[in-house]
Image (cartoon, helix red, strand yellow):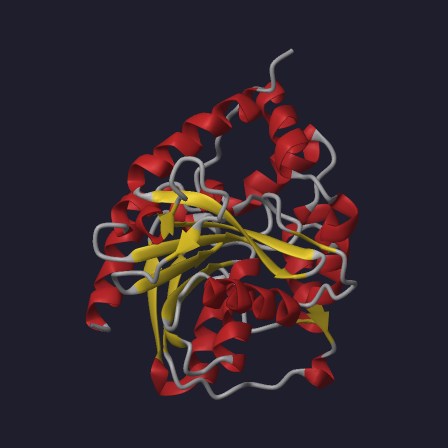
Length: 309
């Protein structure tokens, strides 16, 4: 029987290519490869008969990097944003390690390692400066990039994320939505588990046939062992938490009905970040705000990015 989600992937990939981005694998170091969707004009294929690898040219517009969350790879997460952004920006959509074909044989599972690999990959693609948009898990990676590479990141937009997942935040967040562990929430192994994840991640309850849930589980939740290790590598002790002083402008763009990282967490984070941070809520949207209210989200995102010009 045909997997309906797998069958739709070529269509989504075709739409991404029409929007002006195409896939390109980058070797970060031996044993570590990251897949990126990059601006089509930056990849030059060799002429017929030539064996040289594709050559990379530098982006021609301001660079925008879109970093996905934990439940899906890059272009699935940002499918409604790419087409709205490629006219004014050189858009790069990475697949984090153990998502969308990105792999490593290194044992490090920390957001810091994801950030280091991601920046190495972007630099190999000719990116010298960028603005970063991070969602959920990708937001934590984005914060780490901004912390480690101050001159590389000009500004950030973060949705449904926090600076770091501490013991207390992890426990209180999971308890409030009725889950006992991050893996139970973010690595569902059954249709019932996936429905529970979607239920807490969205404002408006969605209905899909069980077969579609089953197909989504099969396609999107690969590398389960490694992803469970990523979740373990995410949580830090409360006593190890430090609030970094970010030089960049940071815009928190939130679904007002986010049940996973609620408004009070977002507002507290804004206070912690200080004067460089701004906050904007989007009504009738949950954790998956960019998928539930894409037109509103894109409008808010472009307005903030334009203010940085």
